[in-house]
Image (cartoon, rainbow, N blue to C red; front, side, top):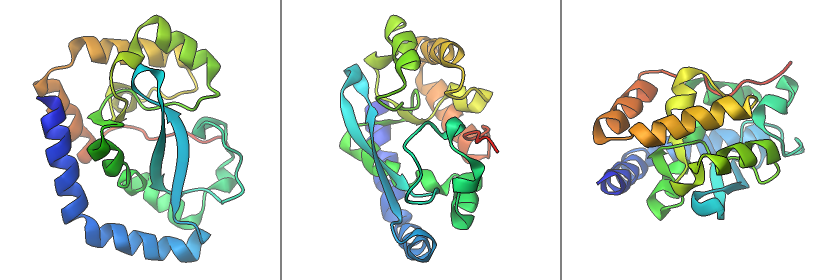
Length: 183
């Protein structure tokens, strides 16, 4: 049933949000000349997939977890997109394709070995990664792999339609801390 809502909401989001997606894309052209950011991430069953979102960092920024990136790497538009979570909108395509869910553990990079070990031990990769989830709403990011894996496992164990909708509405209402970046 959750997959049905993922498809419905991602399709609605892409269709209704199309003008906003185009506007951000055009604005981002002047900010970075490469508005879309694509990066290989780990998905369900540890299968890699290509995540897409709006670029928020300079093109030449090293491919590391956000909490390891320098704040000086974030562009002016990128800062706004992060605060408003609009940088995540293109991930609705990943949800529609089936790479992701609206709610689930955030997909990690292939080089985040410690997190991969922690999540594998708790079977977190048995589900699709998500755009939002309990970790984001609780302020836990990828800088604390064990805590993140534990809260992801808790979310998966307790997932229901009620919690799915609750996390979506909390996220849309501005809940969650977003990604931390060091200065």
